[in-house]
Structures are given as structure tokens and as C-alpha cells.
Image (cartoon, rainbow, N blue to C red; front, side, top):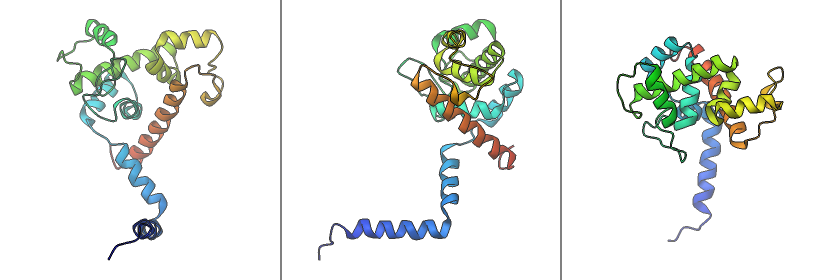
Length: 191
């Protein structure tokens, strides 16, 4: 006996409706979000969060959005590792901080350099949101955008006139991820 083409999709839809009714949509959404926003390398992140005075929630949000926690991620622009550190930033960091392992893909090295750089950007711009933009678009672009009036710290970032579409989407994703990680740590699931 041949099964009609519509039977399997129909049963799939019925199953999903029943499943969502039993478990609840909010619970499913929470499970999906937890799965897509892991907490890994806790000792390393905690160490450099404290050393460079950068919120660990922001570090996790950057890692999530830069590499999805894939250690060997490499962008089309050549940035590498968990925090997508560029070769220029890496070489500069080697002259400023004591790097234990000369391997940009090493988890600890990559996180240390990324957090050091993020700390530098926060210090330079005196504003975390500007630092997030600079992490994505480069500090020179952010300085230019500030000078041209595209960014105004007195206004909500969603009203800023960010010239790069990718960077506008990036800050939105990082801020949402940071908020999620903040809730996760407050809930006590992770310390």
C-alpha cells in the first residue's frame, strides 16, 4: 500500500501541535536558545573577564556571534578562532601582553587576545556599545561615525545611523545574546 504524499506532513504537523501544547512554546524556545547559546571555557572566560575587567556575559555574546564557539572558525576577512581575532590585532597583542602560546587558534590565547582587545576598545570609546561596533567594524570607522554624527551616545543605539548593515545587525545580536547570558547567570544555572 502506497502512502499518500500529504499523510506524513499532516502527521508531522499534528505531532508538532500536540508537542507544543504539552511542552509549551516558551519552554521550547528556551531549550532552543540554551542550545544555541552554550557556556563553554568557563575558567578561561572568568580568568580574562576579571583580568581585563570585561563582563563575562559580553565575552560569551561576542564568542557566540563571532564563531558559534567553533575553535577553528576563520572568516573571509581572515579573522580567526573563537573571538575572530585578526592577524593585525594578534601581532599587536603579542607586543603588549605576555602570550603563553603562539597559536591564534588556541582557546586560551584567542580568548585572552579577544578580551584584551575588547577591553582596549571599551577604554578607548568609554562606551560598551561603541566598543561592540568597533569590534565588528574597526575602531577607525567608529571614530569617523562619531565625528560625522552617525552615533550619539545620548540616544538609544537602535536609533543610530550605522552605515554598515552587517554592523547594525551585529550589535543587535550581541546585545540580545548578552542579555540572554545575563539572565542565564542570574538564574544560577551557571556561576
